Length: 209
Image (cartoon, rainbow, N blue to C red; front, side, top):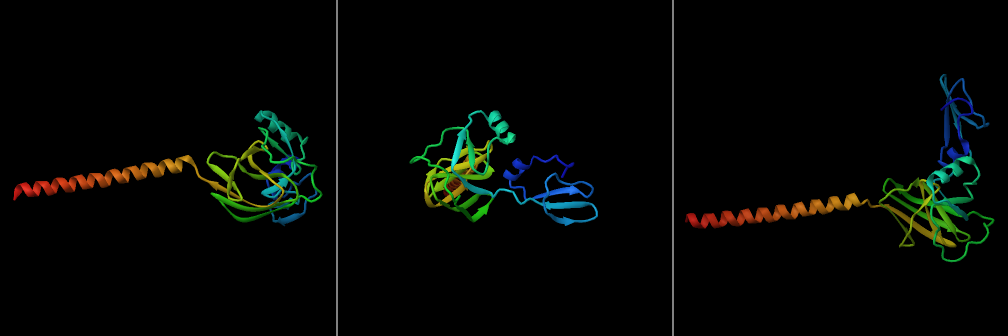
C-alpha cells in the first residue's frame, strides 16, 4: 500500500503484482477494479500484471547492471515485448520480426526447487521467467542443458527456438552436493572406524584366551 500515486505501475506489473492494498481513505492513480473493501482497507485488482513466465522476440544487451536497472525503471523498454540481457545470447538461427501471436506458456509443475514448462513459440524467441537469477539453477530444453541468461536485471531467460518445447528449471546448489559429499565421507569414516574397533576387540579377545 501507499499514498496515491506512489506506485511504479509498469515495474510492478512486470513483478507479477496482482493486487494493490491501500488504506480506505487512499486510492490509486489508475482506475483499477476494487476487489475487496472493509472499514480499514481497499484491495484493488491489477489487470495488467505479467504472467510468471512469458515469451518475447526482441532483446537488447546492457552489460552494466545499474544502467540496465535505470532503463527498466524509465519505461523506455516495453517489457512484454523486449528482454534486457547483460550478454549477447547465442541464437541458433536468426530472429525475425515479432510474430502476430505471442505464443503460449503453460506451467506443468512449479515449486521452490523446480519448474516444468511447456512453451509454444511461433518463431525463435526468448522465455522470460520472472523468478530470481541465482547460482545453483539449471535449465534443460527438451532434456538438453541450456544456458540461463540474466534477464531484466534480476530474472532468468533462455533462448527458445520456434516450435513447442519443454523447459525444465531445477535448483541444484553446489552447497547441497558439498553437504552430500561431507556426509558421505563422514559415514564411510565411521564405518571404517567401527570395523577397526571390532577387529581390535576381536584380536584382544583372542589374546585373553
